[in-house]
Length: 490
Image (cartoon, rainbow, N blue to C red; front, side, top):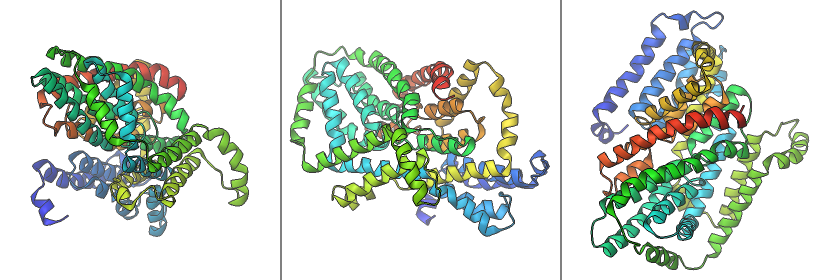
């Protein structure tokens, strides 16, 4: 870390830098039950030490999160987390999770999203959705929320917020001019609709947020089963559709205090669409490639069944899993855009590639926790959770995850929570959804920070609105997890 970065560190970051290795040293060095588990020697304590170090560094953002993610590569072989005397073998097992197919799925998905951004296709989709919903104050607010969510299904929530904030600001300026007053309440609600829609939309598909890839990877590693693209959408998308009206109702409760007239938001939308002009060849190409990729994901199970025998013959009995198929579709789609000249190097440079390291670090941490025997020990300690009534289980998991995501990034929260919860697909899924449901603080998610940075939303307004939505999200996820998720992800 450079001297400038060191000078700019906050007190919390400095505390985290020392607390991480100190906690790891205490867990590993002080005798405890983790050192005496039958047949496991010190390995559970070593894995717990690394997990504590990573969690503290992630939560305090003591160093760049991608740097924290590579700690298992260094520490697992040194501390003997894996059941092998060969440092080379242990190093290989530490690195292997960084090559997990779900990382390539997210990589390809980010590249496809970058293609949409490069040609403005995501912007056109958002504007068309808003025009279709309507331009009265209530409809305009819901249109902003729905458009942000729809785009965030397929590209990162951060990119969605960055794109939608200027549209929202232009709409707000037009409405202020029409009404002749600041519209503080409606303006704040309109900007918060961007943040909340971006967060919620990312829940709906496997490529919508890094947290979803973490979930799929942890389920594959801990339970030995793949969660298919459609299977995930069936579990997650209904929650998005259910909670969007809830978010709109809470935002409109605040926005309606301005008692606005019909407004002229339609003029701004029409002008923005006119500036985009007719669809370019690049837009159409990206749209077709993305649509084909989406169809291949949606109809993946029957197509994979057709391809699997040929793949097994060609690659010495290799079993084509769902994650391999989905990752291949994503990578082939991205390569196709590059070959056709529809995805530039400049667009690829804007992709947050360090997120891939963060995913790999989470998968590596999960591999070490599983291989060391720590997972079995934690599961036995948390077994009582699964014996509780269903509503209590899901309520506890949802509430704890939302609270944790208020002080840490949703990806870091998911990496930690999914490795300590019981190996239950419904519980892990509810925790994953909940990690994207922090609405109260700018630090909760990048869209929250981006919207807060617009200057339109005051912190007390975000907290007042967001805390109510946090509570409502926890309540809905409690019922949703105990019913729908439990049924579709048994």
